[in-house]
Each structure stands twice: as C-alpha cells, then as structure tokens.
Amino acid sequence: MDQSSAASVPRHVAIVMDGNGRWARKRMMPRGVGHKAGVDALVKVVQAAADRGIGYLTVFAFSSENWKRPEEEVSGLMSLLLVALSKHLTRLKSDGVRIRVAGDLDSVSPRIRDALRGAEKDTEDNSRLVLTVAFNYGGRWDIVQACRAAMASGVPPEALDEATLARFMTMAYAPDPDLFIRTGGEVRLSNFLLWQSAYAEFFFTDCLWPDFDAAELDRAVAAYARRERRFGDVGTSGQGEGALGGAADGLACDGPGVLTGEQ
Image (cartoon, rainbow, N blue to C red; front, side):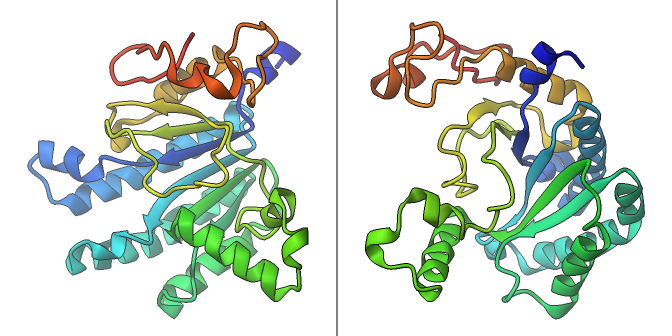
C-alpha cells in the first residue's frame, strides 16, 4: 500500500451494528436468526478490516440500554455471545486479531464475564487488528466511570483536563475513531463512544447489518477518504468554516442512506 492509499484508510473504525431484527423480520424469521446472521457478518467485516490495514475496529455489541429488551431476546443474545466466542475465537486468534472489551462487566453474569476476559487473555499477543467489543457499554457511563477513576487516583480538580481524563476512559489504549459507521438506516449515536467520537467522520447507511460486507465497508472508507478532516481549523484547502460552520452545511447523500457531509 503506497503512502497516499494508506492515508485514506481510517486507523480506527467504530460501528453500530443495527438492523438484525428487521433483517430477520423481512424473512419472516425470529429475531434471534437475525442476530446469528449479524455475528457471521461481523466475522467477515473483521477480516475485511484487517485486510485493508485498519488497525482498530470497535463494535457496539450490547448497550447498557439493551437490558430493556424482552428477557427472551436478552437471554438469547447472551447465549449467542458464548457460542460465537467458542466458534470464532480460534480463527480470530490465528488471523492476528486482538480482542478487547469495553463496558461494565461487573454487572454481567460470571459466565459471560469470564468468557470475555478469557478472549482478551487468549489474544493479548496479537497486534494485526484490535477488535474492541463494546458490551454493556454506554458513552455516558464511560465518562462517569472515567471521572470516578480520576478522583479515586487522586487527580485534583484543577489538574483535570481533557488529556488527563482521556487516560481513564475505557478505551485509552486506542486512538479516537476516525470513521463512525451506523447501519440500518438510523441516524443517531445511541450513546456510543460519545467522548471518543468528537471528531469522527460519520457514515450512515440503510444497509441492514447482516447484509453489511466488504463492499459496504469499502463504500464507507471511500466516503471517508473524500473528507477533509479539519478538527476545528479551516483545513489545508482553506475553504472550511471551522468550528462555526462547515460540518452542518451542504450535507449531501452519496447513494441511498449515506451521509457524507461533502462540501
């Protein structure tokens, strides 16, 4: 990969994997079938991301709000997680994937917690791609726990700045996401990586998660590559509006359901 191609590939991609239930409903199948198809899609996307040189992939597997779903569905998701780890962990490990977990595991069952921590331990020597599974995670929870951890470590109020607090976030080991993808046609963050996504580029697609594949990932990366990332400045072109304008101006759709924010 040449230097210009490497620069167009996001280092860190975050994904809200939405649409499993609707995918199953369209096929007159139970929601659980959609979740199983979603796991298969994830395994393929992990491989595609690694092949494209993406170093970090973070996926929203189970939010702190998902406990509100029907008990049968939640139970099915817990069982599916255990099956997925058992079925795919060996392959992910051999492919050089390191698994990390972000979320409040103190309030999940010991069986689930042990399985997730075991996957982390089993892949800790890998470095080709870091796959972070956000499980029982919420962006607001993450900020609160970081504040509590900073206070517990003795950081005085006058010393608490953004850089200091960032060290206590659950994903302090990873760079902030460059590209934030949400499938399923919804256009919101849903309490995912609120702190970390301050300057992420967003890509929304109508594609339901089980149908998301390498080609869809390439579409998202291509949209990312067309963006000029300014981080509040005017950018290299000098045409941006900085903090007071551009990101909300001239939003354009690059194909159905894709919000690119081109200017």
